[in-house]
Length: 372
Length: 262
Image (cartoon, rainbow over all chains, first blue to last red):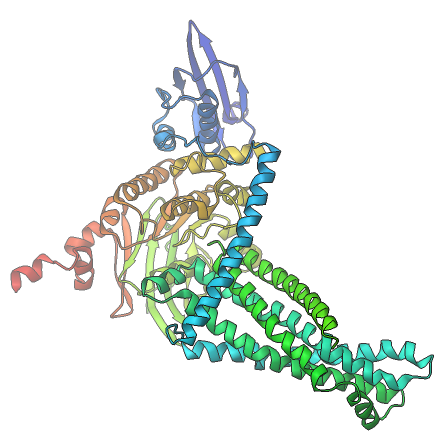
């Protein structure tokens, strides 16, 4: 009788209540994706006995269903009389450790004002810890100056290579294009006055004062600052920083100083390089509109002197400090999961670019006062 | 050379398997069978290639030579869709848990279920809660992996491996880093799951207490000879193996033979 067999295989849970005693009859084959027929389920609570004579095979769906009932009824150790041995074993196992109820998503029902307060104090604390980190950096530099802070020279030179030589191609490409763009844009305006020659002044001043150092700083925060944060962050996640501490290394001296020094050393050099390449780019475009390179250079040097040329380089030192501190800070404070490392990297880039722009505005004000 | 056809009775057969990293050969000529409902232990000293063998069996690494068969069909020769069908029936727990850190414990289990079944979100959540309850983590559904201890991560890793009710469960050092009671509970869990779900277990471990408590079959990888030392029930191997390295390992270096002869 194949037909009857088929009906017998449908998973069923029938709740029966007679004379104050409830029983749950479970039958059929319980399989993932087959909807069980459940009847008589009301507010009868947990059954006193089970009938499982006609229960076939089952997978996780059946114990998952029973466990949900246990949680709904809310009893700690429900009677399992009459359950078939294998099912009973699984249920005992699942119920062995009581549910931990005190700590499910703790922020769920807080007042919005409380949340606002929590957010603000968090922001305040993170600003404080950033300042603390900056202070620590200064102390570490002082320690280094008196010879008490040590790091491996190899780390320093590797970082120099990474943020110096290895950055040359991308810095060259971007600066060259920026120089060309400045010349093109300038030419459109200046040509209408017949003053195309002044492209030289425009490109020269714009590159050495602003664009050269700015583009370099933005490239370096995306390239090197992010790398600092990711590297230190994953060291943190792997407990490598703890290992440094227990061996008596100061992680600050060991990780932050070589990176800071390398970047502060390389940023001015990269900036000078970017300035030169940018001016070459402008020169190329100028040659295209009829200004020979020699004339371009002579005209440019009437206004770009050593004072003008040094401004961008001076700024680059500060930008280098900002990028290194932002990268290392977010790396050191990163959480220990792989997602947290990614977040730390993002934060490092965003905050270093923000700080760079703020510093640049401050310099603009200062230079205006000094009438440079 | 050994016979390279699989045993038709076996759930998993490994034939003539050679594992290598580039030209560095880790193990050669491994041959063993795992029957259905076995709790099979891969054992051996540290660095002998236990985890590598596991990775080869689940397809994360390709063998240099030889084949792995499931139910008599070659897994090694299978491609793409066919291979996915094999993998779908595996559950794997990795050495460090390897939970996805941007998801809660419950989400770690529901994600495979959402991908591979047509169930409603509510049913999926019930299943996830049940799997977590099985490993003693009721109430930790909304925690993130970095908010719970290492042992809990490990147990959640087992719960995730169980997500799709797999036929074969691979556990890489499940007991390492657990306290004796949790470890014993885990052994009990493995036995219960084997009995009620009929799953086959392949476990990498070198914890003797666990091995003798649960295993009924095993393979011993010998670092010196770079091939399998012995295969069979570890309780028999401990007393009767003809290979001295196997007996030393299973008796924590104190074999009765050497004690009496020296």
